[in-house]
Image 1 (cartoon, helix red, strand yellow):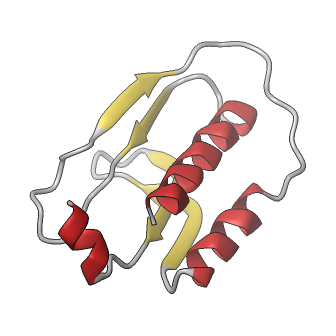
Image 2: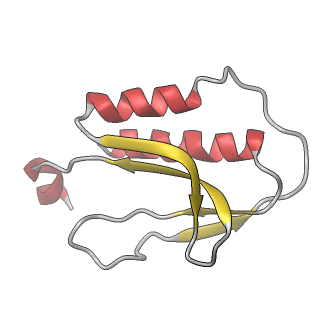
Length: 102
């Protein structure tokens, strides 16, 4: 499960580098039952060239999430401050063995 979460975050950041204008990228990792905000990281992007890619990033993230029995969505969203952003959300199930390791 940890590898899947890592790869989804990695691909999301790669997509931000390839497709987004320079600006803030926010990664928020939340585990159900824990206070919101743990793992919350913001990084400022720098202007520069975009990275090449195959264009299969969203499909791969969706398939990875589905194989684990999770839920995936990606698309435009409006933040609380009214700003339009692109949001990727993946919910991955945590089984008992995962909780025992934490």
